Image (tube, rainbow, N blue to C red; front, side):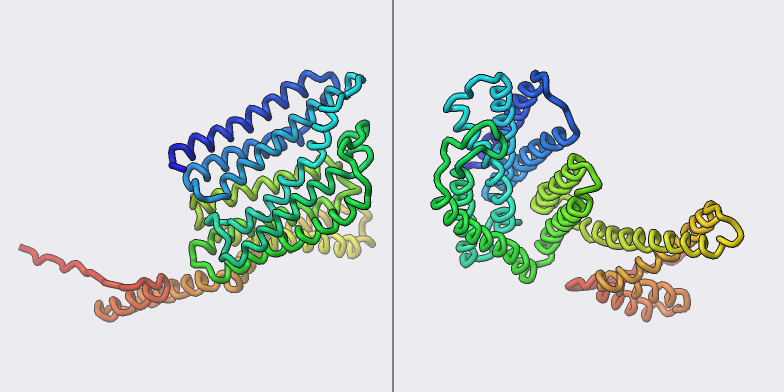
Length: 396
């Protein structure tokens, strides 16, 4: 496909996904029972982000399958939203939905399968250059594809009321003797596909050059944020409203296409080390200061209990203590993180500091030039170093 055709196709698919989402809003806003929530806005943002970034990646790199997968996810999500709205509006009339609506409901009921599992398998296998690490990984791709198809058939043929539409019995439902073995086969194939896809990223990282390692770091950072969101959702399931936890999780998931697009398009690619560094430093700093604050409040309350029953003095003293600790603790944590996780940059910074201190005492120009070349070679590791010195002109 020529670049011009690829660009036209990519942006046409993105526009189609957005048009479908607009049609969804037209239907739901006309319904009397519609209640707008922040989660609905995030779902639309999901379609918008995947469609826009997919078009950008497919336009710049039409042979890279990641961009087309993004567009497919955007279209699938938009069709899921639109189908759900149409079926719900038909059911609210109280009339017989008809065979066509029942079939559409059965399809919408399993619409989440490709959107989730294609992203969780093929995106990892093809990231960042649009090809598996080697031909041997094609078996993982076939296993993932077979698992997705089998899960669609197995889940789409379960007899009884549909999960998303309890008022409709599945028109494609068959007996458990068929869906049970097929579901087990789908689970096995998907497990191989999912684990193999994750393993492909690890293998690719171990054999990658510097640029590709930076690309994979973006994906790994976004994945870590999603894992943290999942942990938050599980830990606060009984204490926080489900709309809030779902919104947090979906917001975290939106970081994955953004990080992948940054990695593939190489826009601010090398900022990832700064992002990881700051996340580690301020994450540890927040936990340390929070623990110190709570511990100080409890200890001061126990110590001051014979004098006063009020906790205001303990809280004020703890706040001042934590504020005083902020700068030295942050500096110490920054040093530990740099030394442990960013050793090369830490060593380079130390070398430059030592050279700067020695520079004040060195007066011999030739010796200084030799040391400068040595420092540049040690910190920046160029293939070749040349030092040019300007000879001062003699006064006329």
